[in-house]
Image (cartoon, rainbow, N blue to C red):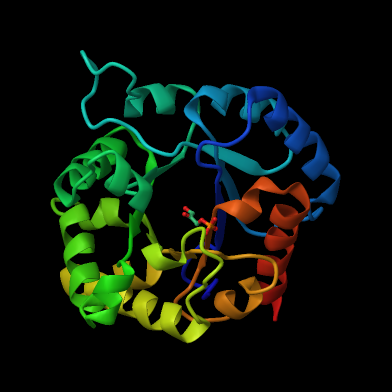
Amino acid sequence: MNRKYRKTIIAGNWKMNKTASETVAFANEIKPLLPKTRACEAVLCVPALNITTAQKALKGCRISVGAQTLHYEKSGAFTGEISADMLDDLGVKYVIIGHSERREYYGETDATVNRKVLAALAAGLTPIVCVGESLDQRMLGVEKELLAYQLMTAISGVSAEDMKRIVIAYEPVWAIGTGKTATSEQAQEVCEHIRACIRKKYDARIARGVSILYGGSMNVKNAAELLKMPDIDGGLIGGASLKPADFAQLIEISAQVENE
Ligand code: 13P
């Protein structure tokens, strides 16, 4: 991380976990465990149905509540979908876009990810754009080309001014929910490459201001090592964000690494 130029973000992705009452129980449990001073930007992306419950339950504890996806159209006949304006109206700031599970199970493509990014930006939201290679792609050694393509498509048509509001999450698909973490060197190499791609498209000033997160089996044991890397500015955390003690500790760890 490099706190001089960019925000450190510890973001939880709850995926399809926790009912409304479990969300309240989580909030009550985590509140006394959180650092007293502002540590980093802490975000929990909860199921859309529980956003308001989470906001109320987490009030006053400096964790902002985000969403996990949105639709790219402003409104209309899209049963079951959620628009950027709906999220903005609830006071949501962060929204995950293009998570590999959305790509795999719900047919999201690089092109729809791009439309979603543009819709989120137009509504004033901050997209957390996910990119990542599969195991096969890594074995073939094409991950850098693939990531450059995913990234450039996702941010196609994004102005330099808007790029400052985007967060990128590098999530190697083979590391998600598998307990296999990328080594800090592997993750750093890719995050550095992502920053270089942003530099090439915009300039060095824009690139150094973009927070790039790592995601994939990040936990209290491996977080410090990953966060110490110069181009890793935080984490997008699945499983470990469901446990109040672990999520609080991850926030604490990021503060410790920042202060080193
Ligand atoms: P895990 O931390 O459970 O591997 O999930 C990572 C992830 O997909 C976050 O978006």
